[in-house]
Length: 81
Image 1 (tube, rainbow, N blue to C red):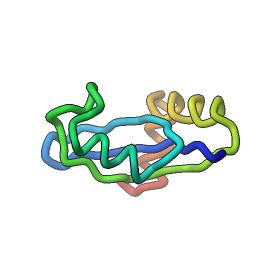
Image 2 (image 1 turned 45 degrees about the vertical axis):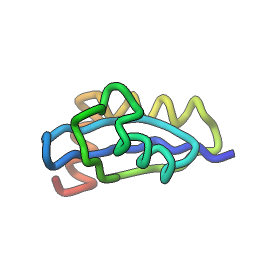
Image 3 (image 1 turned 180 degrees about the vertical axis):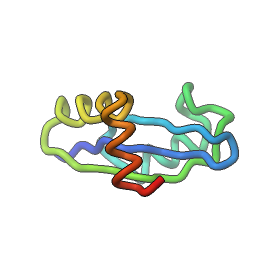
């Protein structure tokens, strides 16, 4: 099974969200349907970046990395944001 670490962005609220899940399309639908508490009422959300992993723990660690200072720099350089 593949797992994904991902970064969402809401242009309306200017918010980012970092997470992991096994189905990117489904999780994006859930965020936009206000079914995930931390992002409720802050959408609409668009997928900015994702990476796939064969290991759930690796996806979790990568999601945590995105929240760090180094991870923020990585995303800014990668996304030219």
